[in-house]
Image (tube, rainbow, N blue to C red; front, side, top):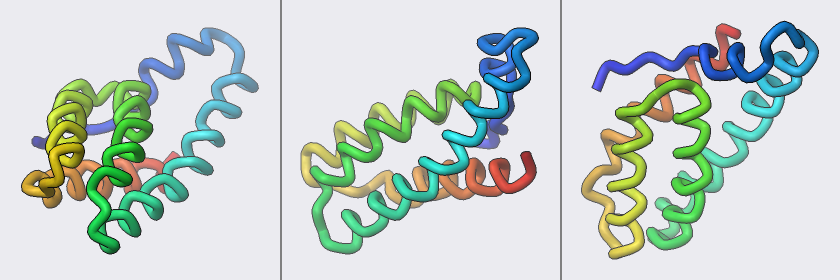
Length: 106
């Protein structure tokens, strides 16, 4: 899954309001690392259902970053975690790393 995040949705939402766009991006940059840390701790503590709650929050950020395939993947992964399984862990981590790298560049 080589989908790349972008700001298309945010720019469409903001229109000509650059201040709104920057605030939205700042919220993403602030929340994403916190939520990913909670996710990793939940996985580390063998709490897949708690991880599912964070995946639920994170998947909406995938949509905001125009990552439809990643969103669909996260929906399936959330269901898997709710069932107590973590088979899709490595694929989800790749998505998180891709977004983390992107957020560092904007």
